[in-house]
Image (cartoon, rainbow, N blue to C red; front, top):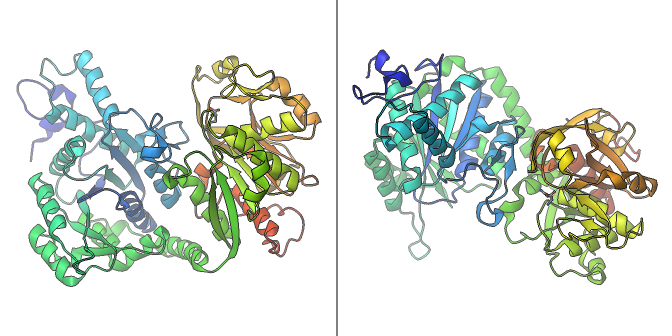
Length: 592
Ligand code: GLN
């Protein structure tokens, strides 16, 4: 092990030493424990779900956990990624645009994350290049090892220090063997060496194939990938085997033998009915205990905390498994073919449905060529409609047509971001009679730009001409449906990702025609939530925010709860708030 002074700071970078380990001031080696999850064989195994479930079961033991996802791509964030290719862009409260896996962590851990929890190669290299320009490498040629790997270790240690967590939980993107992720693997190898014995627990997720023609499980791809990991200097401590069916002892034995991992630490992680059952499966297999034992954290575990956390979670999964009122929710959108693009909406519907006892079936409505005449037939079996976030022109007219029918026929409606803007446009056109009203995103020359970019406002918000991103406070109109859904709260916090907004010049006219803006930005006239009075429509709500991003299994988003409840009633089911026959739930009735 290197001596303390050699590892103690950036000033050591010189010709004299090969050690380059920049440490954040105040960091003490060996104090924080690390768990690192690697993917092998192939992507698409649910590594994010596995890793966040493992982080959760550690958190359930009473430990504080700070997750970080290390992405191989060179983008600085996920903001410019196409959801077709990469799934939805998840926005954190501090405005960081991340990979959808961060959403999985927030939901599983019921914890708000920040930019510190998300690193990309783009961020790592940008910092290295900045330091190079500032001359901080003291004349050295800047190399992948030790400089770039040093920067990765610095990121992990900065998170350790800032979070004060017991465990920093690292998920390395991609799979072992990818060129773009290889330096992350090297960095965590160095980290384990520098932090010392029992500091880094390495967990490899692998895949056991079961070719149809053979009818038996084969471990060879998994073996070869374990060998590849070991060739990189990583000796896994635990191996989790993804598979369709439970992995046989024989296969696990083979894998154990080829990878020096004791058989009892080679687990089957076969398919389950719901991802929310994975934490209990991990506990059942004893993986949490093995991680704690390896990291010598057993004394920090709190059995009572675990019992409480477990009961709350089991309560949720029990509801999840029971039968519920079937409802059909129509979701319009141009990415209808790829569910990952709407991952958080699917989750938020599931949270609200589970909470209220509904089984939500999602029907995707491609609005690209949808005409107004076709809408009633298209919505015949639908109990509620969501128009989700989106960008650009495609499908917009079809969405406006949908919202018109939904508004006129009392079908519950929830508009999310673009869906909020579409509702304003529809109202302006068909209620106010402003023919051709639109958003300037779609029609530059519209006579009534009810939705527009307002650069002055953006400047006040300190965000230049760009996207308004991240968490913002919302002032709630007292007595509104929004206020009731949030138990009478006067201020709520929602997450945003938009460029356009309601032009304040139209607010008065829209309000005079019956539209209620029940949520507004605190300092500026930015409209954040709209609704129709319950006397005119059972549930018509839109929000400029992405309410889906902050819904959690144990804390469903109130707007989704209100929407699903209305959809259940639309389907003919009784009000799920059985003991409260009033039109709206009473304060205190919703879990928040
Ligand atoms: N395209 C709209 C805007 O930029 C809505 C954005 C969204 O739905 N995320 O304001």
